[in-house]
Length: 171
Image 1 (cartoon, rainbow, N blue to C red):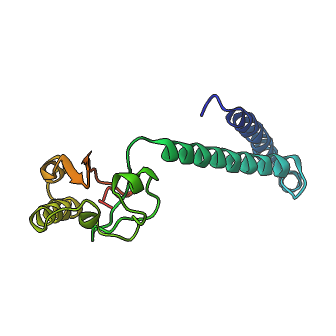
Image 2 (image 1 turned 180 degrees about the vertical axis):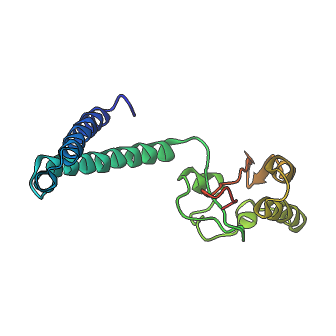
């Protein structure tokens, strides 16, 4: 995103914010606390620059979400997330509808969407349970999933990887 005009604006405003903040700190260090309070009041340069930085951050967030949406809408593979009960979560790529031959994807069990036999589903569930328990390395537990499955007339590739929380736990 560094080539985005909104990014250049954000960087410039962020630098300006730090210059204003440095002026406030210098004023405090000079022992002029009352002047420093005035420098950060509503309507001050500091306040205006700070507001512009927040607006620019919001604009960058909108741009990221917009580009992410474009990518997800045009990706040539289906991307989805399942929870520990193997229910597909919302936010999947639209190609999942065609790949999985289903108009409804979110809220459904992945085994059903992949049209797995009962035996295949048991194996799939066991591998995924191991992945969510996070005892074995994901390459081991998820490496036992089928690489390809037939869904109707299509043969689709399956790749799984854990999503980790900030605490490094499988989410």
